[in-house]
Length: 138
Image 1: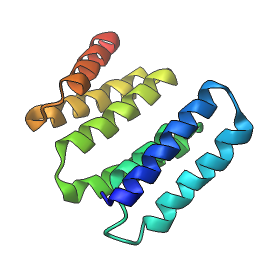
Image 2: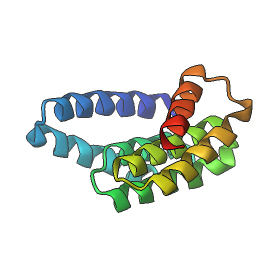
Image 3: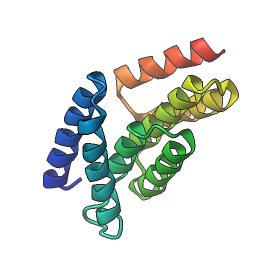
């Protein structure tokens, strides 16, 4: 990922979290719009476009269908990178979202894909989160 974009994405994520924690919609939505614009502006640029942008946008999207759509876009851009970690992270995030919306079967399907994607990934924290969610859903 382009370093400049990574820094911007990190800054937006931090500020979005702060606004969300304070339930400050006045600050949250302009930041969300900026993140959304970043994703769509970079989408046609193979150097600037990255699945992490789309996953982050999905993470901050309230509407279930729209968030899933953004996760699917993230998966599309993760596929050429052949990164199990991106695939696992995105599917785990989708599973959590489905769980939060009382869609346990879809959550379990996604978390199982996340788990299968972890075969060559050495992220113990993500693996622990996946394992925990599998236990909760089983």
